[in-house]
Length: 359
Image: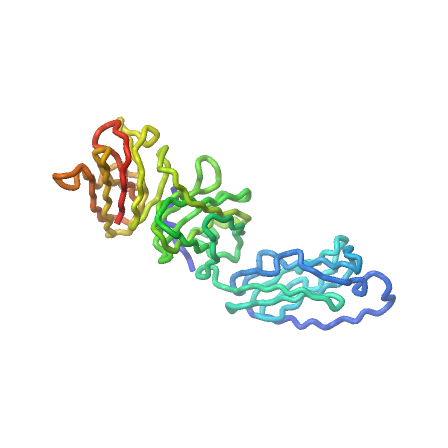
């Protein structure tokens, strides 16, 4: 598990395009044959101020019968926001398609527009120029977001690009986030809205996709779609879902303060020396304290806490007091790191339901 990635933190040129008047035989191929022009790329784009949009605007020119027309000059002109274009007067190809070379947004945050026109017809493309490190699109829980890592994205200190998404968790529960890509080895991170780290994952099993499973209280969170190697770009898909399944099979499950979850120990859980346990991962800042409680009427609750990558037990509790077999442990972190909370029974081989609370 890679830990603790850190965030690192053009002259506007408006194109003036002169209308060209063609001479010669107006009945031949050219602008006079164009009866319509329509976009074949997205008309709503985004990008960092002063950078090029990921998808160059593209249109198709058709005649009155709806057939593609070749050889028609199409003019792409910046009409708002500043910025510039290259290849601003392409000619439609055999499929009637004309694509601008590139569109670089203005240096200031705000709305940018680009108009493609031919023979009196036009299409407008709009791009929102905003800081990719501070303006987050929304990822709706339970949906799929198709994204693209690019050179205009925010980036971490290791040079890897990252897209941030805001997601709202409606109630305390278990939630799963997946990032998949055929283009690169993915890396997924999860933060609170206040930028406190909760979780991260590189590989989901043995593949290059990433998964975070976390028990979270309600609120707003930020999901970061990233790559494992630095300076790579490409398409990816981000998906999310709620889960009602109990923790099992020694899976990595992240938690944070403010949760209450009902689970159970079973023979399919982690097993060490005959003791079954569910292991939870919590990220703590140096000096941060948490109180973990484990209650059960079926088993003698027992709690342990260790630092990630270190088997030394930093804290344990068997009985919260002399009158109960419930366990409670208050722990203050030393170095900023991930820590493992082991919820198990004091008796080897014991199974049964329990409730875990982290405050």
